[in-house]
Image 1 (cartoon, rainbow, N blue to C red):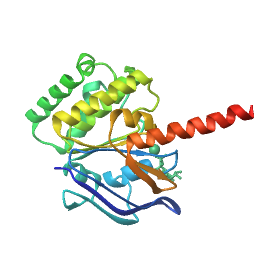
Image 2: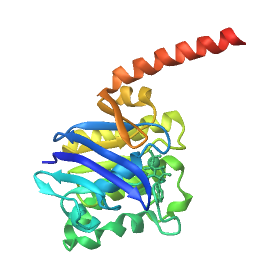
Image 3: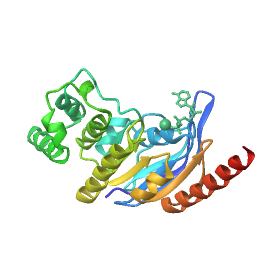
Length: 243
Ligand SMILES: Nc1ncnc2c1ncn2[C@@H]1O[C@H](COP(=O)(O)OP(=O)(O)O)[C@@H](O)[C@H]1O
Ligand SMILES: [Mg+2]
């Protein structure tokens, strides 16, 4: 199970408000995209859910357990895992060392070994390069490694912050295909930050639009992609007329 409830959550950095009374609900096995411009509060929302930043207001629950105010390790143990923006791979460590980084909270050695084997199964390139330094991987391979590392805690809910950042379109397709396959195999619940509505629509799922720290719109990702296409056609047309 991984039912997530975010109720009126606010986040501030000192005096800077980043998120204002945001509420959202994610059902078990569901996929939701968070979209919005830079500075909208997307990463802050994910950090609040994972416990990486404190909330100044509101409540977060997973499967009926309150996560708010608990340390990130406790939240991870509850079954929540995050792939941070920028991936945060340890470039000087090997691929396999990166996978083992998060296993400190687990003592079952044989389960850890079988999880690593499963990740090499899902991402054969990581298995082939297990002893290579992670910094030598391509951007797409590093994103796969970041996802693989997040899977090492056996999450029920996985949050991925801008997986497509800096990747070529065909590599982004591969990353999303892998995420969707993992979701189906493991029954994962997925919360993904993705700025492109077209990309989200291709993958499919619900979408929430953040702006200035608040939710300004939500619906099916396809509706957003259609609206954005119309906007582009309108403004694109206007620009051509002006020229
Ligand atoms: N560590 C931080 N300290 C101070 N302000 C921050 C910090 N991180 C983010 N902010 C501010 O909070 C707001 C939301 O940022 P963020 O959640 O990173 O947005 P997004 O991920 O949508 O780009 C922005 O105004 C940003 O400048
Ligand atoms: Mg961000």
